[in-house]
Image 1 (cartoon, helix red, strand yellow):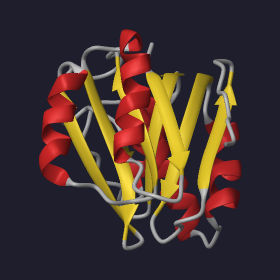
Image 2 (cartoon, one colour):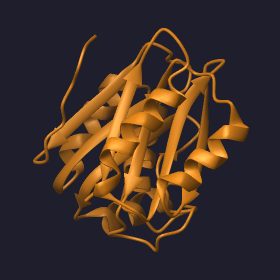
Image 3 (spheres, one colour):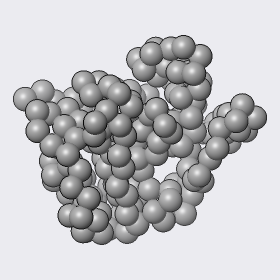
Image 4 (spheres, one colour):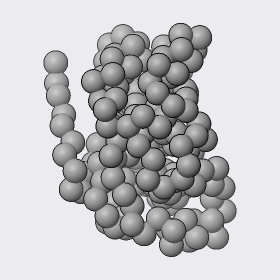
Length: 183
C-alpha cells in the first residue's frame, strides 16, 4: 500500500505535495519522495524512512516547479531505501505508483535487452522505462502511456510527469482508486 498525489498549480507545489503526503503517510512509512519540473526538466527529492526525513531534505532543496508528483511508500518490491524510493524516472518521464505490476520481471528483461539501465529493484521503475521506450518510438506522452498500460498486469494507480511538459500531469489506474480534484 502506498500513497500517491499529483498537483498542477500556478505557484510552486512542493509544499502542497508535502502537505498531501502528510495526509497519506499512514499508507507507507518506508520512504517518500517528490518530483517537479523546473525549467522544463525533471527534478526529484527522495528520502528513506518517515516523511519527516523528506521534509528535512526538501527544506534544503527549494523545489520551485508548479507541477509535481509525490509518493509515500510501503515497500513491496525492493528494499526500503532511498534508491528504491519513488518517484522513479528516466530522462523523459517520472512516475509514482500504488499497487503491484505482476509482470515487471519479464518487462524488465525485455527493456534491459533494448538498453534500459535499471537503478532500482522496484516494479515501478519498469513503468518509467516502458513509457520512455514508447516515446523513443515517436509517441507523445499521452500516446506512450496509452501504449504502455495494456502491457501491465496487476492492479495499480499511476501518476506521470514528462520532461518539457509543464502543463501535463497524467494519471491512470487499473483497480485501486485514483481521485482527481480541481480547484
